[in-house]
Image (cartoon, rainbow, N blue to C red):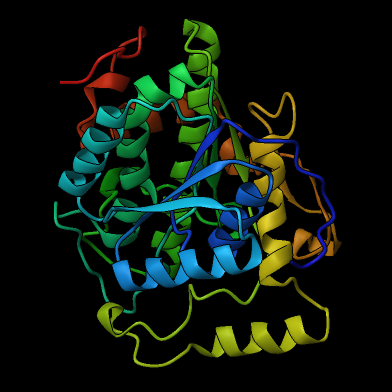
Length: 318
């Protein structure tokens, strides 16, 4: 396994759930958690890709306890189904890494529930997942990590048209989804502390790394790798931006560092594009507690997760 700049504590007995764990930074995160002794659950949309990821993780960590579950974050029904499965299993969750996402479809697309694809997948799907898993997260005194992006340092949440029904712009919609995700993650930590839920929530971003976010995705209307992805790969090869491995490190630090709740982690190099992981100053778009509370209320309503609608947090979900 590639050498990494941080040490992860022994996670034996901890169940970790990692979305987007079948490739890229998510797979590195899952592999490192498994190597530390965690039982890793990978909810995946593509079973074949998920099986390949499990085989790859076990090739690096022969003793890895890793398994697949079905999840399509663009479908709130799929999120609810996963929640039902994991709650029926009854195993407390100690780490949840909300890592999966889609980026900049050239034309506006919608989720199964009619939301703009990036906002619905990157943000609302993860909001719903937190709500569905809340009893298990509370039982496991979990650390929840929301993987945002340097794109959250530009643009704004488009409050008056969250689903981008007017004047869709892929990059701006992506930024909006990641800012909303960051605001929600911070508010989750505040509400947990205020109401005694017992979990903590932190944010991370990978800097710039040659992941598959901008790779060819015919189902997104992108028939070939973007120019941006080719440029990032070239820059990564000469050390000017990060690697897939380095991009995973901030999320791993956010997931395992003591007292990380409410904190933000990313690469420590110039421009925070690469380098070892370190705590960072919150982006200006994430500093407003009023915006965070607004993002919480709007998102919980849109995602349909009553477990998050009251101060007590649900101990049981029907």
